[in-house]
Image (tube, rainbow, N blue to C red):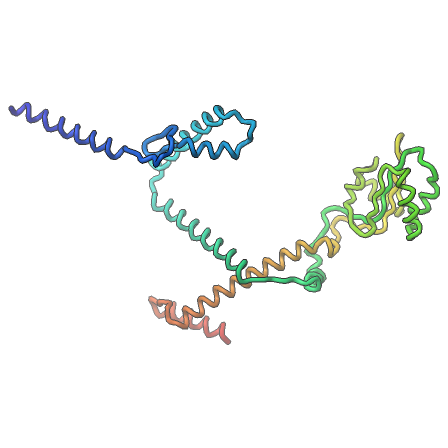
Length: 303
């Protein structure tokens, strides 16, 4: 009888534990179709199907599902190993909470700026900032303004074209435009806009350095190869390291000023919240030293 009791109790306990485990292991799939799982982590057919829709239509569906299931299982197993081998769960929770806090602050800040800040910047403000801070805007490559012409090597009236390009009077420009319609491979008029010197050199049988040296000696540059003649008339050239023209720096200045306005706006909102909490007595001081420090700071700020 004693032996029977010794073996009966563990057997009953084992049966109870198995029943409890099977009960706890039941998963409510909520109408979804499970594909594969590890414990309570389950990958569903519907989730994979939604991802496949956004993938390239040329991808084989069977291969996509197979590869995705494999990656999903590997990720779940790797995460479980991380859970077992990262001893400081509290540290992870602290990092997660800090990230959540930063994310909420960022989202609210953007919404607040969008709802309450309506910044408008005039060209005068942009120009003023530029002329006060022009040293901040340096060219990373040379820029030029002028006219570029690419002609077949046997193109007619080359002497007249040279004359038009060296003078560039309104009448000369009109003549160049008419001439280019029937004779030019490329005609590019950029007297009122800026082109990078490397982009112009790329159209000619010259290096950037050689073209820059040629322009420094003479504002009209002409070279030829066996098939074409290349002619460039430069009105203005800015070298690398010189200040950017204000029109090229405008977008950057606009972004800088706008970001500054946003930062000042958020700073003022935070200050107003602090002042109200301070005046309403909602800030709790746990020692006289901290109270004295903030009170003195508040008095200084209000002067």
